[in-house]
Length: 496
Image 1 (cartoon, one colour):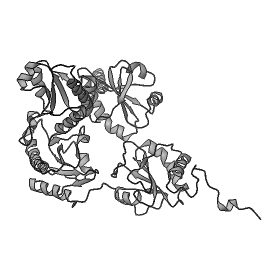
Image 2 (tube, one colour; image 1 turned 180 degrees about the vertical axis):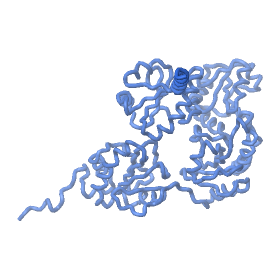
Image 3 (cartoon, helix red, strand yellow; image 1 turned 180 degrees about the horizontal axis):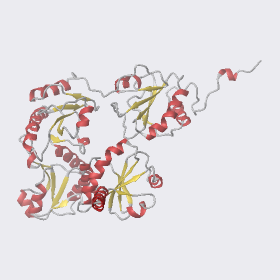
Image 4 (cartoon, rainbow, N blue to C red; image 1 turned 60 degrees about the vertical axis):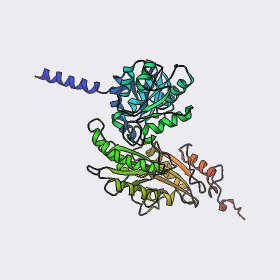
């Protein structure tokens, strides 16, 4: 019996370890192992990092899928709290940092989506050709028989200038499927002449937009812009992997979007969004529309202040060009949706601001900033402001905290400068501040609140003071422009 239990335990243990298809590399074997892969994605991380913890299951899921791809793609991870040499070599300063290696050398920083589907799509593109060559009618039909937008370039020769432009653009748009052909039979079967055509899959076709759209201009820039716009269409499915591709102002309807199990039900609501969108587009309004799965984008809904998913009907959140968020409070219907957009455009709706409560007392040297007092403190036209955006779980932020407190204590009597901090995980960070890692620091001078400067200097107290002494609008009272402490007038007096 004990022997049987041991066998079962061994099998289970093997299954647990086998389920992790992410390869672990160290200082000792990184160089030799990374050279074995044609294409590989490397995640440099720290175990304590919150972003790393959120990425981990998505990264592991993608690794399992990519292991079975053709060709297979390997995902690697390196713990930078242990493997310090390799992380230093590749300039890792924040977590997680992802880089694509090809032939043992860094090819580029990975800037794609950080959920499994997006990672898979991006890395499959990196490993394979940017455009599939269609040599037969069957291959063309198979390419078009997918549930996502496909673009086909029809050419006389693969080395023509038009074909080269097409392939260049295809390499720049990893979220879109591309194929090309020089086959007369394929052109005849698809009833196409030379040029570039975007095909919408059958499941996304509707009476509100054309199923096939031909590019009628010329040039790399215009082709790229055309495909980026038409691939999304009037109302595309917006996911975590393509969310950044949508223009603004943007109106998103969240419901049980599922083109696998319920395409008819999904298109029932999508068509209502498209009906409104088409009318507004025809009126000359530049607005963007999308649908999203309410479960996948649940966190985004919470960020918009929507805590109930609307039941059988969509709930709606909108973003303006400044990335401010607006929630639709009425129950969804075509009429209420139209009214919401009308009120949005007329400026009748207040934006939703994610914010912790404004502190009752804010008398400490480091001022606490939240979403609701950001303008009051950071955008104060009479004060220079140094602000730290941090996360409570961030190890680097915890290390910085005592130095930041010391800095604020030394400058507490400076009338024209504020040392501030904001928990960027609990409060909205407004534009133009761009926070992708922690801690991120910005300096907002009195007269340039719309153009804050990202602080890239050292993080010792004297380094902060030297920076602020130099950059402050009117200078510091207690320090000269070179950061040296001024002598007090009392110390300058000569005894009589």
